[in-house]
Each structure stands twice: as structure tokens, then as C-alpha cells.
Length: 409
Image (tube, rainbow, N blue to C red; front, side):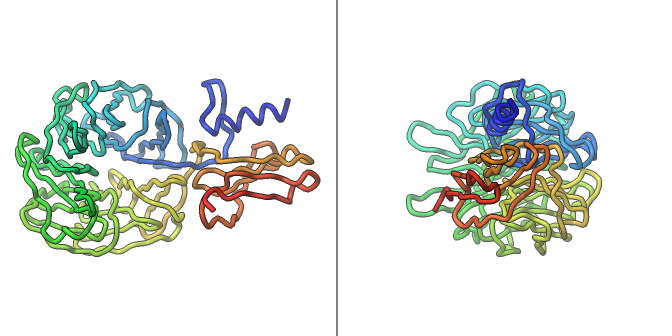
């Protein structure tokens, strides 16, 4: 019975569980997105990278986590509106919650759309904007979405007629009529960044792509200063472009890579953060100059960054192996996964001579071992060179003798 109960618990980790099954660890797993509440400085929300999406909440700045709700589909973007409503884009729908993520409502179907950015109006809870690309019958085109009823239904405006993909959207806090949507065009042989701007609340749009961005491959992110709508940052695969006149002219201020999810600090807008592989970029002069740090970070992608509501030097980051927090302005980081039991199993093996010993490969997290039926877990050093293990076998007479098959090599 003990081995059967353990097997059911392990299946729960793999995503096959019913509501009566309980995951037992290890802690960690893919945190796709993290957002800071604009209602309470200690509250943050995290979204998992599986379907249905699990929504987790921390009320102590990430020290501990509790699962609060789920919604169908994969989450690709999330944001909080001015009255605390949480919005999440998933395929051709927007899900929204008015009770802190406990329950979710689904918008009407947005025709053939894939949503990749959400920007609620900073003061009017009925207006929400989003960035998407949709299939128009012949190709995928970048489009702007707008809701005037709090996310229940949406209209769309195609921004071009060529194969284009959306990546992000930004709205001016001090000027909500100012909007930017970032993305990239596929030419058939290459990718070219694009950036569109609206100055009338999304009614009309014009190309505002920096001339110097044409060789930067992808347009990844866009952000507007919360205190000065003239300061706009546009992140690409090969650099960062900065405007001081609301997107009319641009200067390339960095040649660092990727610039995922650029986020200004509301506590001090001179502090700006952006993610990259194995590091987080930080600026203390509103994006003019940048430094980076990987101290304490796992070798993973940091695609979503959330600065603390009232502390400019506290910032959160999500990645495929968990949740990270910095309290010194992004100089150093610590992993805070207490309560985040969301990992997915690639394979596992039980020691025949010691059934309380289990080895388990967690997707993206390496190999873990328990010697007490899952009450405690140890993260093992593993020779991963090509990918996760897809098979683990333990010698019949020796629980320390383990064979593993690597998934990508």
C-alpha cells in the first residue's frame, strides 16, 4: 500500500491528478509569469506553464506560496487592472478574475487570435487593451485588441497585412491614450522587429519602429515610463532602443541581448529591469545605461520581471525552474519556492531493494532523490548536456547504482 500511495502522489506531480490527490514535492517548477499586485505591496501572483494554468499567490513577497485557482489553457500574458481585476491571455480568450485568482471568467471568443500582451487602462476598469496576432484567412497578422466592458468581449484592429507576430503591449500611465505594440515580421527568409504606436487610445495606429532596429531580428518588449510618457523603451533580440519624445525618435542605448519583459519600478521609475538567459539587466537611470547580474540565478530564461510596488530595489523574476527575488536592486538573487510544488515529471525510478528511495527527473529542474517516500527531497548533481533524462533505472541490489537515459542525446 505504501508504494501504491507514493505512485499516486507522483502521478499527481505529473499532472494526472484529480482534485483528491496531493502533490508531495519537490518544490519548484516552471513559473511562466509573475505579476505584482497594484493593491497590496506584499501580494504577488504566479502562473504555471501547463494546461490548465495553476494560479499561485504569495502575501509575503514570495516567502511562501499557495495555490488559489486555475483556468483552462496556457497563460501567455497577465496584468492587473486599477481595481484589482487580474487578466490573463490564453490562446483566443482572455480570462479574468475579480476575487484574487480564486475563480475565473472567460471572455467571448476572439476570432483566430493568439494573445501575447495585456494592458489594462490605468484608471478606467472597463477598458482593457491587448496585443495579439490572428489568422486572417491567408496569413498571421499583428492586431490590436480592445475591450470596453472589462474584458468580457473584444474588438480587433489588424495593424498590417503581412506575416507578423505580437510580443508585448504598453500603455501610458500618465497618458492612457498612448499605446505601443511590439512584434516582428517574417519576410520569408528573415525576421524584422516592428513597433506600432497609437496616440488616440487604440483607435488608429502607425508604424513607430526605430530605423536602427531593422537588423535586430525580434522585437521582444516595450515599456513606457510611469511618470513620463515621453520615455519609451523597445527591447529587441540584439539591443534596446530608447525614446524621449514618445516614440517619434529613437537612440540605441544597449547592444545586450533579448530584453524580455522590460519593467519600470513604480517606487522609483529610474529603476528599470529586464530579463535575459541566466541574468537580469538593471538600469538606475530610466534605461539610459544597463548592468547585469547572474548571482544566485539558475541557468534558465527570465522572461517575466515584476518590480515591487513600493521598494525600488526589490524585484521578482520567473523562469522554468521557479521563482527568484532580489532585494538589492537586481545585484543578487535568491530562489523562493516554498509552497511552489508545480514541477512536471519526465521520468522516475524506484530502488527495488529500498522502495523508499525514488529518483525523479523534473522537467527543466534536474534530478531529485528522496529516501523517505517523498517527505524530503535532495537536488542531485547530474551530467545534463543535451536535455532532461527520459528514463531512470536503479540496480536491484544497490539503491546508489543508477542508470539514466538522456532525452535529447
